[in-house]
Length: 250
Image 1 (cartoon, one colour):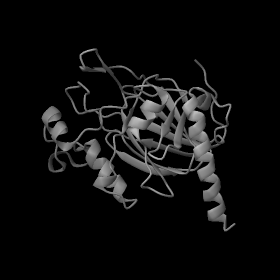
Image 2: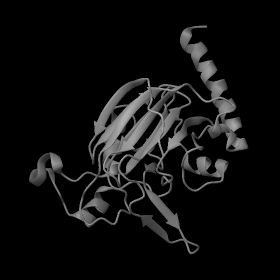
Image 3: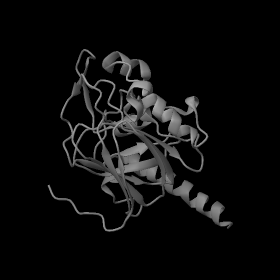
């Protein structure tokens, strides 16, 4: 499948495995995340940049759209019933919403200590600690952690409630496009998925690009995919309109 290359890329960065990143994506811009080598995992959190107590809500995102995972044509809801991001392109097809991120205990049990004293900059990192370090840059802390997305990772649940991690869900070159429907803070880390069966610590790198795309309209496939998404767009449009007027002094 050949997809158009964005013409208005305004930012580009390579994010190594086991690293964190945060950025404000303005309304009408899209963040493209590309798996560079295959088998990447990108744990992600989203916040309303103007009022960070409003943030990505996993239960509302799933219930409103009658889904258990995310892919192209769906959106990420906040806990205020507004849309933070829409998924406008996705070559991977399945992104985990239910498993959370790794922590220091999980990483040590699976891969050993891997301390800074022994490995220097290659020491073993975990998702929770990297989230907290990155959140602190925006005056956020433990209470601001919520259930995160795991982009490029696939976990299914059988009829008995057993979860299964699927290896090779993402191959080199797979990408996902996240279009901001309001000014949103994105916080990412590239630590391995907590259910990754790999026996070695081997987090994978990704490429980050931001490009101008314009915001959603009522005819956008992400909005028409569910009736609830139109209401979410209306709520978001009303909010962003008021924010613009307040910010411009009108």
